[in-house]
Length: 232
Image (cartoon, rainbow, N blue to C red; front, side):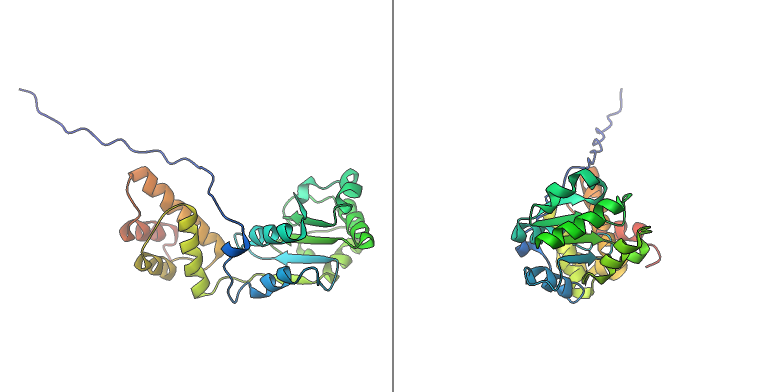
């Protein structure tokens, strides 16, 4: 007589599928930490200079704000690592330009220097995004550093409590996940208070939910937040 063993439910795999992050102006969450930056972006074309620096920590919404401005200004967008001298005449002719992650990749400093001069001469506008201020980029061209430091800066600070909670909700909605307010409150109380931490936390909860084949519950969410932020 053989014993019956119930089938083991297979463990689902969580794939890194692209998240439908919406970058419209109506999707941007404004709070005390980013209202100055949002106001400067919205004030274009009345900027006080041809160039504007947008500075904030990882995950703070710099790309989202840059996308809002690019749509408004009909700007081209490229990463700093794509910039080289040969592209300067073409890029300067566009009227508006976003250069992202200026502090991350090896930067062609002469190309950026010439591009800033060319866009200013043409009356064009340039939005440069970075996590830090130019003095921390390791620049070797003094004239470039001087020009960048003179440009007005839009700064995004770490999120306040209300914005952090709203951000968690948005990140879950972007992944088509609905969680109750009690879960959001529990996460906000335990997690590190940063934009990047909110993104990483929701990503981890989403993956665990897929692996277990279950909807997101408060118990599941608090399990993840305790593993990611044990000392919070």
